[in-house]
Amino acid sequence: MDPRLSETETAFRDLVRREASSIGVAADDIDQGVTTAASAIGRLATANILGICAPETHGGGGGGPVELALASEEVGAVSASVGVVAIGHMVSSFLLDILGSPTQRQKWLPGAVEGSTLLALVLDCGDSLLKSPSCAVGGKMETDSLYLDGRARAVTGSTLADFLIVPVEVGDTLLLAVVDADRDGVTVGIEAGQLGLNGAGQAPVEFSGVQVPSGSTLSTGNVVETMNMADDLFRIGHAGLCVGIGRAALKASIARVSGVNDELCREQSVQWMLADMATETEAARLLTWYAASRTSPGEMREAAPMARLLAADAAVRGSRSAVQIFGPAGNERGSGIERLYRDAKAMEIYHGAVEVQRLAVAGELLPRLAKDINPWQ
Image (cartoon, rainbow, N blue to C red):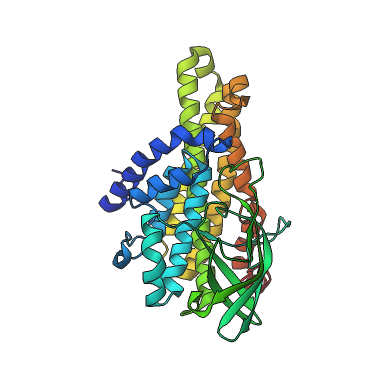
């Protein structure tokens, strides 16, 4: 047991690790398009991992950001593609719990917890490296229905999702709409091949006059404040995922060096790469756990982008070193090593690039800039 975790947290981490080991077998198939992350997500749901952050009253685990970080690391160590879909689903479940009415929670949360329905949050960064994930859809109210128009460039899990959680700007008001992915007017594109995170169902989503009944809008709390909290949960989840990538790269590299010959093991440059990988991965893990354990929104808002930044940078450096240590074998498709590197690089850009995280950290240091940086202000 890790002395930094409680017995309950340790037991949960070990559960996810056991379930994730079976997911790892399909990781390369998911990456190469032979299959998608959907079946792996189902396995996580069966073990009640998808519902860890949902309330116990609706079948969830009643956990919080620490459990999210632990689950993300374990899944990220075997498949980052599965990890990003799972994180999007869990954060969407959090939004349903906080902003939904009792009737809405009863309608959607049990299915989300058991995995019979998969959720995807519709956010968009456009084409800008410096833009945080934000609302891409506008709406107008007519009688008792909301009508949606807009397009999000790349929504994780959209080709797999049953329901889309859509932040909508209605005049000066921000609402969240729960939209059936098959509803008239919703067009989900095709997942294109990309550098990393393949198989995660990332595709454009377009809304053209989509009618949303009033009972499908979430607005029982402070939507802006809740979206800020969701941002931090995403950062913590993605930081944990990057720690998992770094851990997998380190584990594979140690096995490679130990199993080849004494010459490689005694090479000082290789020793230094391993030392840096171990140090940076552990530092990222500790900062991620620190951010996840903050009890006040203000403290989490300070620490979460730091964790996301450090973990993404560490994952890229660590996986790049792993490719170097493996030599020609590390450059081959199907080796698993080059996939770690591609996924790590994608995580430097995905859902708010590392540059955005630096801006977020700067916004906490220089409060007068915060309003310019935060998309939910």
